[in-house]
Image (cartoon, rainbow, N blue to C red):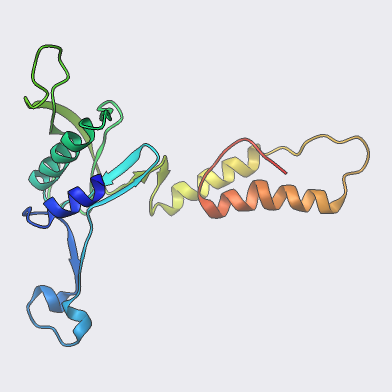
Length: 186
């Protein structure tokens, strides 16, 4: 529901991110597909969310509206874990940006705006503790996982079919899925 609410609000928010072809943005479509516009608002899973915007003011607006929405359901933003990302910055960006928030102080209306300084990281993106589009980081992560992986000890020779199953489920599946863990299962 929050995602739909954010999509509705963002459709009239200047600076909300919408992808389109260069022909569409120049009002010179050559094909019917050039008229397609893709709104990109939010990605969420478990307790992690990414809210997309083209400008900092749009990001601040969308984050505050989403926080107000989630507050009604008892969910709170963990500002200590919150990070803002900027991709392809046009100039030297500050190290932090101020994000508006509801107030959680006793005796004060939650609709009073409080600001939180959050780190601003340039040219990187992380979701569910996985760096996005960073091949060097991903290689190091996989290499370290494989180097640290140990096979369980068995009494007697281990059947090749069992070794293959352990490798496929414990190493290959994690390498393909992007989730690293020290545990293994059969």
